[in-house]
Image (cartoon, rainbow, N blue to C red; front, side):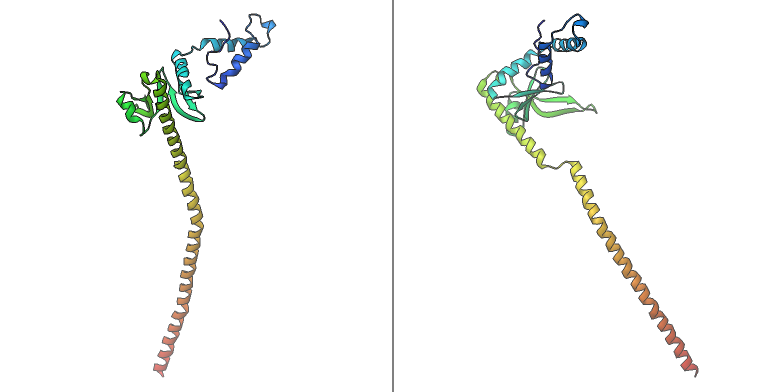
Length: 222
């Protein structure tokens, strides 16, 4: 059993395993190796994970699309062109990002989107459709479908950046409310002052009227 790591090149997180084991081979004697447990654990890790033949085939076929990277994702792999994900490999199936510009091609080929059961038991369908086998095996068609898929992925990413999230909207509303609240308090204070002034202005008028009534009664009595 050699020390070549099955997933080397797919995920940077596992690259250190292969390098470490190449320097420190597993041994049966603890006294000869201070890192006995670590070395043997990593060796078992790298030799126990089976490599998917379909994944290696997809890697080989997608070489015509340029430099790509593969990252662990939801029990499968996400396929990236630069920093943009455009495809997924899940359970020996290749899925490309689909949108208005290329969905009809997948439907015409009898393909379906990737789906899974949600928390409520409802089936959730995502915008990734299975790539037909004949497309995967043809270089020209594969490049054409890849370019359309990458374009749809870039569109979706740009739309996400433009549309603000619900949290941001709620925060902005709260900030506006805080700004307006002092103004409302100031308006209330002004109105209360005006009302108090009116009340105080009415009191002397009433006293004057009472004095006038008393004076008029005295005149009549005379």
